[in-house]
Image (cartoon, rainbow, N blue to C red; front, side):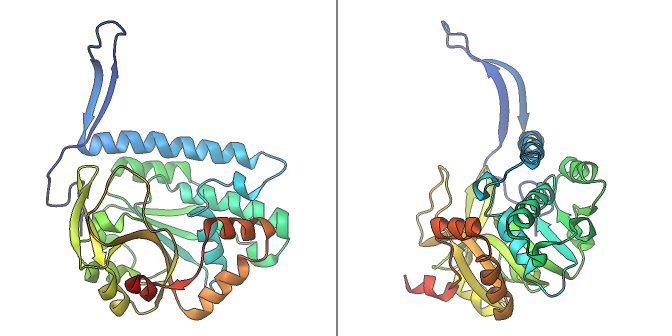
Length: 295
């Protein structure tokens, strides 16, 4: 498991540069140049802080459409999953950044309560225990400072993370944090349910590289065998971006949970016409991940 920016390996260096280019000379004038963790922290703090500001603007709207909701694949799906559980107490996010997930869930809650009136969606988000792991002390501090009215705990060391939690959320950070299926499954099996953007391989576990950092593609067959709950493929085959992997892989979103939670998740997704439309347009289905091995 990785507690540092590059894990143990380092094949590239990440830079963030602020520069100007005179029209006539085309010569680059560099004003600021950051690298490695400092570059990563600076860019991501700015990116997610802007996202939180955007959530605040949208919350002030009198009318909300489902397509007004940013990052529905994260915020909407997480809210539906949390509402699907019998026990609703805690969320663990791997790579929690500024914990903008909290702001996103508040926005989804307002949308669902305004448009459906169903009590099942009326959850007090300030009562949820949010646990976040991030190797960045700056982002961890920002997460706590920006959400002082919520129950937020952040960690930069694996040994400090709670053993059990209700929901595990991950947006592909597991591929940067874990080296093999066993390390990943130890976290998956520690939660009631998991919503994960996973990079998986049909040809065995291997390591590639993105953003100058090593990234693991986990063997899908081994992952299915070692997970103590069913793995559902929701959508997605290839993540957007300039990187390509010359292997038979899937870069998609997965729901890992018991059948009763999966059924409730599916039921809740049908209660609002807007959410129904989003699921249809995004082609979100609860397909058995085993089917991916046959394609």
